[in-house]
Length: 245
Ligand code: DC
Image (spheres, rainbow, N blue to C red):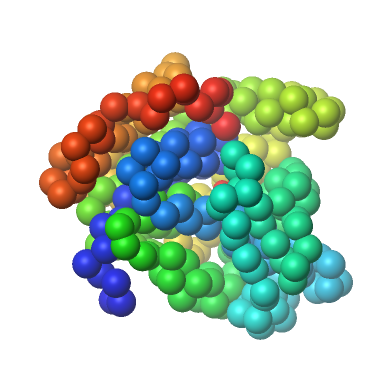
């Protein structure tokens, strides 16, 4: 596998488990690159919908995704920026509709195959924190540390609800809970790369934990798994990262 000597920390788990927030904080703390693989599936879903493709048109969606012009600009703002053919789609891909579309196209084996190379290309020195559903199982099976981050579906829906409210998006909590349970089921039951903890992953339930506590645990595991890490790793990033999302 190209770049196999570059260390990878795989962070997998369901939506709302806090993966995104934790992955960003850990990557910043370690000075490593970050792969938000969910964004790639969201981009594929968005591009397919805009093109009028059916979300189960496997060859169509995979062909489209293979040629997408995607730019991740991590330096722009606290959450970075995502460009699709030059257009800033950072907000558009974060909607619940885009999440549902992503979850649907993510069931297509040809699409998953088409996105593999793009994901592995993020593996660059000094290291990579990879956030997704199948980072430890499929994309980086040789990752030096695999963490499966989870939380109860009620807590995950509550976090997502709060996050959307802060953005001025009004969604009912029961509707969100239903959507989240449906997405969990689809992600866990699909035939290819289903969402589940690898046998060699460390599972962390964040239901009753703060961001800082989760980040501290992951950094401590990273310090043990990657002995070459710079001194000072293993404690949370200063300033705290707010609520898990
Ligand atoms: O993490 P997220 O909510 O941005 O992911 C959106 C969808 O993409 C999710 O429902 C499942 C899919 N996904 C996947 O199948 N594999 C990944 N590595 C990341 C996301």
